[in-house]
Amino acid sequence: MNTRFKVFLGLLLFFLFSLSASMVSAADTYAAPYDALLHQYVHQGTKVGITANLVDYGAWAQDQRHAQAMDALVKTDPFKLSSAEAKVFWINTYNLLTIDLIVKNPDIESIKDLGTLLQSPWKAHSWEIAGKKYTLDDIEHGILRKMKDPRIHMAIVCASLSCPDIRNEAYQTKTLDSQLDDQARKFLVNSTKGLKGTPSGLMLSPIFKWFSEDFGGEKGVLVFVRKYGSISSDDKNINDYFDYDWSLNKP
Figure 1 (cartoon, helix red, strand yellow):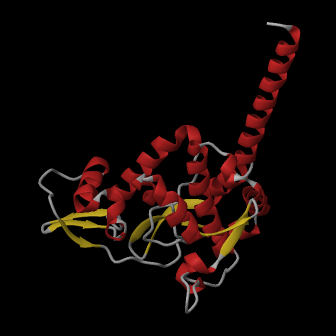
Figure 2 (figure 1 turned 90 degrees about the vertical axis):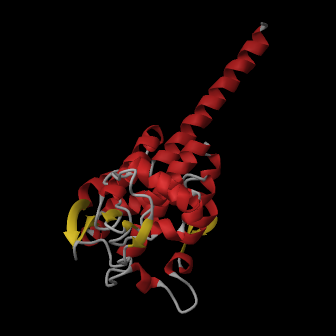
Figure 3 (figure 1 turned 180 degrees about the horizontal axis):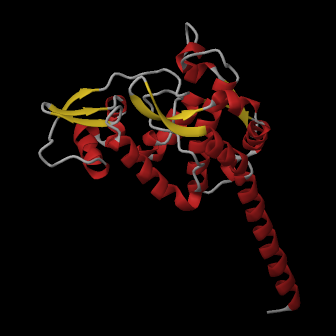
């Protein structure tokens, strides 16, 4: 190996290492303040008979770390991330943008109050990320559902009591699989909104009806809830769905 080639190879490796390091730091910059906010302002509670992780949106809104997290998030270029990093990024992004929407509108009682006559709240509001505008609808249906992992439905949270609970920690690439498994289990053990056995059959969150195709139809839904929920093999049918409470998941 001649000297020029060694120098070229060394410079190339240094460039690739630096590029990789900058990409990771860019992807993670928002996560530290966001993770700290989740730890501080998300706590389990019960409201109108529903057990849920509740968010202190009022205190969150006053914390400067929210602006730090948002500033770093919108500067991140998701197209420079690996597929694993992108999955984590978009799950965290959906949840953080939802919180951003709520803290900017402190007087509402439901995210549905932020819609218009022509658009749902998930389509009516957008954020610019790395120079491109995204709505929550874009992220959920145009990006996350296309990843073909139904556990994502247990991870993205619409700021409502009947949603799967928002975790009190950010999602991370190295722990994502275990976090998603844990989300599915926690949601399906929650008999106030996730899964409940009745003499007539199973009562499920309507999420499993709305997004049935993502689970592989009704049979796929049953496979999913048997894997992650505490039900017996005798529970063979879905009998009903919970009423969905769109009230804010706040104390």
